[in-house]
Every structure is written in C-alpha cells, then in structure tokens.
Image (cartoon, rainbow, N blue to C red; front, top):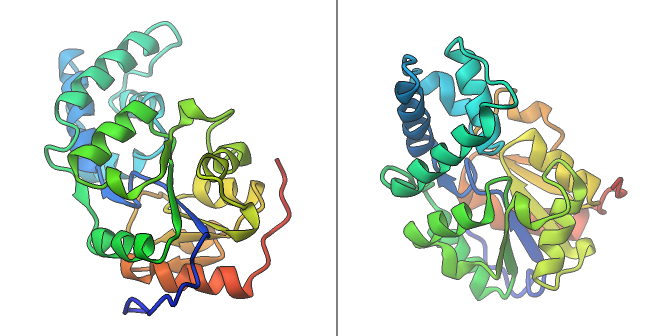
Length: 241
C-alpha cells in the first residue's frame, strides 16, 4: 500500500476522522519546548526530548502532570490549573515554530477531498489550539470540522468523542473510519462502533501493533487504501458507549 490508489468515488460521502498530534502533525518539538519553558520558570531542570515525546497526545494537563512528575515535582490539584493556563498561553506563541505535517499528509488530504470524503479532526487537544495549529501549518481548509476534547461530551477513549466528530460533518458511523496513533484512538473508535487505522510513527509508549486497531500503517500515504479496505471488507465493531 505504498501508492495512492485511484479512489474511483469509493470514498464519496464516507467520513474519515483524524487524530491531530502524532497523526497529522509532528507537534512534539513545540510541545516539549513549551513544557521545558514552564519547568524552567519553576526552577526545574529540562527534560530530554526523547523522554517527553511519547507523553504527547493526551492533552495539556496530562502532559504537564507527567512532565512535572518526571522532573521530580508532582503536581497537586491546586497547582495544576494555573500552570496549565500558563503552558497554553506560551504554547500559542510558538504553536508551529517547529511543528509540521508528517510526510504525505497534504497529498493524501488533497486526494481524499477530491474523492468527496468528509474529513474531520477528532483530537484530545483543545479546539482553539487545534484550529490555531491547523491554520498555522496550512491544513485547516481540508477539514469540515474540528472537534477537540472541549467540543465533545467526553474525550477519547470515550466513544462519544468519535461519534460527535462524525455527527459534526453529517457522517454515518457505518461509513466512517478513525485514523490515529494511540490506544485512545483505537478504543475511542471501537467504543463508537467504528473501525480504526493507527500510524506507526506517532506518539505511543506501547507497541502500536498491540493497541487493538483494525489496521496499522507505516506511511501516511497508506491512509486511502487502508480506509477503502475497512469500509468495503470489515463490518464496524459493536458500539460500547
């Protein structure tokens, strides 16, 4: 599946929901940089990039909590909210300073739009941060909606997040696929009764092959044929909202 296949209208009207961090965009450099800025402001040592990269993708608060714990200063419930606000404010100033779409993303999204697929972002990132990032890297026009964790009844792995993203673009769960990089994406899809594709180059601390996706791919160029395979040959799993 290394070449973009001729879609021949097979994806017309289908909904493809995408995770953002680690799936569409390599955001780790700016997120890690922002975390280390906050740690420095709190007189804590910076964390190595490779140690923090796999902490990304579960939202700002989770990143801060894990980062501060790794730095030897676990956050309590009282300290976390103002630090999250400060982190978000700083992150917005450099949201795409080093972040960029993964190879093949623009090419694939262009082909999917031409095939009349409904494209939506389903991310645990806040919606305003997601919009700002997508606009900064030139991907926002590809999507019919962006549904962050704050725009859904609950965040992934809750299936209502994936269901809300599909509904936001007028999609049918029976003709939908979730594309992500983590266990939250695989479980969120399964809980919504939707098949899933996970990329192997994203942010996960567990081997991607063990996370329960219907398919694992190693290049973003493999997204269209993977979606075609799931939509034509794999019945959607039973929903467990």
